[in-house]
Length: 353
Image (tube, rainbow, N blue to C red; front, side, top):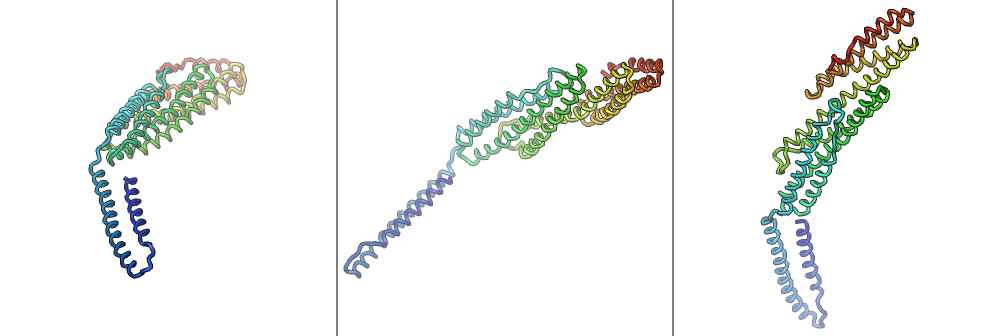
C-alpha cells in the first residue's frame, strides 16, 4: 500500500512538471498575436493536461480503493501460519515431556534434552517469515505478529530449559561425588548448579512477562492451555532446584566436616572436636532450609525435602554424639568415647526412606 501511495504522488508531480514546461512557449515577432495565440493554446493544454492529470489520479485512487477493499487472503501465508502453529505445539509438547523426567533426586537417569524443541522452533520461525512475506491482508499481518509473540515466548522457555539442563547435569555430578565420599567436590558442583538454576529463573521471568501479552483470543492454532502448563511446570521445576541446591550446599559441607572429624577421631587427634562443631553448624543450616522448603515446593517434589530434613536431623545427632566422643577422648575417657561412638552407630539413615 505504501508503494502504491508513493507511485500516486510521483505521478502527480510529473504532471505538474509538464505543465510548467509548456508555459515557456516559442518566440514570435508579433508579440500581441503570439501572446493571444500562446495564451489560447496554453489554456487548451492546461485544460487537457488538467483533465489528463485528474484522470490519472482518479484512476489510481479507484484502483487502490478496489485493491484494498477486494484483497484476498494469501493461501500461502495461511498455510505457513498453520504450519507455524503445528511446530509451536510440537515444541510445547516436547517441553512438557522433558520436564516430567528432569528431577534428579528421583533418578540418576534424569535428563532434559532441548534438541527437539530447538528444531521445532527453527521450523516455526521459518514458516512465520514465509507468512510475513506472503501476507496480503491486515488480518494476516496481525496473525503474523501474534505468532511472533508466541515464538518469542517459546524461545525464552527454551533458554530457561537450556540453563536448567546445565544445572541438572551439575546436580547429577554432585550426587555422584557424594556417593563416592568426595563431599567437597559435591559442594562445589551444588554451588555451580545453584548458579545455573538462578540463571534459568531469570530467563523464566522474561518468559512470564511475554506470556502476559498472549491470550486465548489470539487467532492462532497454538494450544494456549498447554503453553500455560509448560510455563507453570517449568517454574515449579526451576524453583524446586533453586531451593534444593541452596540446602544441598551446606549439607555437603557438613558431610565433608564430619568425615574430617571422624578421621581425626580415629587417629585420636584433638582437632576432631573442631571438625564436628563445623559439621553441626552446616547440618543445622541445611536442615532449616530443607524444612522451610517443604512448604514452598510443588507437591510432586515435596517428598525429596521431607526425606532430606529427616536425614539431616540424623546427621546432626550423629555429629553431636561424635563431638561428645571427641571431648571424652581428649579427656582420656576412652570407654565413654567408645560408648558415644556406638550410640552414633545405632542411628540409621535408612529410617528416613
